[in-house]
Image 1 (spheres, rainbow, N blue to C red):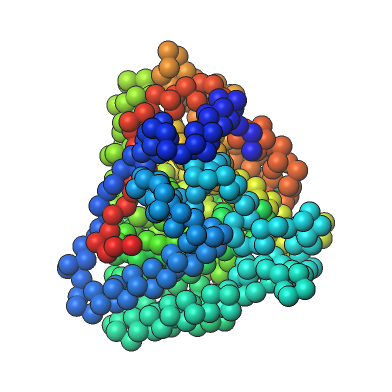
Image 2 (image 1 turned 135 degrees about the vertical axis):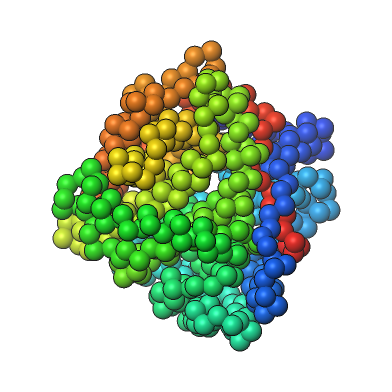
Length: 541
Ligand SMILES: [Zn+2]
């Protein structure tokens, strides 16, 4: 992705400094980067859980630790070797940063190395490290069977590529995790949770996640867990491979029920999308439960660098068409970010009368509707008479495009609902200014990452249309012009998706996923404001 000259230069300088480790600048820089993740206690009301739920929770945390170990293998070739080098030769800060990033590459800076000269492999550790261009073409062609979500690609004894199912590649660890899930199921008094856990344990051994994804949708339990291979962001080469992760959470049933009224609006939103009727996806399931939860433990993919505030799963379109998707809002994480990050960003970068109007409630609602929006729009599509999915057609660009869609459609949905009486008129202003502060928050994740890139795209799109403007280093948003500009952005993205148009996605991303000077200057003023949280749980890693 395009980078501004200043970013390239700073990354280059930092890399050069790191190559001569031992000098004080190096230490200072790495300590600074570690300090950008504010240590924050993340917990829920564990002590008031029933005795059996507490024991179930312990088992789930143990299984989650295994997910973390598997993710490490997926993300970073030679992890243990590099870690040992760091332990022997480098500072504690370097080790801490290595663990935050799960590897020696900075996830906020285009995966540039912060330790040693090893370059980040685009395909992480999912593929052999020495792939030739011809082999990449082989993998790219779905008829060769290397594109499975749940396989690692390696070489056989003759050097030919082979796809090894996760259940075999990670057999020992997945067996242990399955055992823990079955034990948790035996201890649980909740049938829906137990059914999911048993089925997910089976999935670990068979690589068939369909049935357990279906059961995950039906969990109705105070303790809730999301565990397994899900997102494909880590595979920057093809976006094929799913990374292991886990969220252990405690559900707030009252808040969850309050929000469930919005899910009834999903078919209406779909019918109102600003695209051709033939592109609308009226077949999606509308069950779409919403859960407001407090996070008590996470592991794997989601534990790296920037912490998740909400998610929308599963990704399997068959489950989505049958049952919709579940939106899980991690309330305690969201509140911590609003307080520690969003509020100081607004104070530094927004014109004062707009900064005064940012609202935790708007941040929460934007996040909720962001997640709802992942369940709207094209999913299974037809390209040249071929049945396929948007994510397969847009390949490595899919994640950033999909995140842009969800971000822009979040307020789009809220503004659609306002005249129906769901929100007061003040929501237009609160959403707009909170959205603006949120763009800075997320661009700081680095535009190499899907969410960071998505926010750069929105910023530049709105800047081009003068909906965002900057004067004397302070930014403001044109509240009245915002809804129409959003509608335009939503229409463009959805059309790219509906047509599965990779070339259009590439052109769009090349144009907007960039760092203009005014944005870089704004971000430079945020020194001292944490970029994100470093979660501390009651269980050690
Ligand atoms: Zn998202």
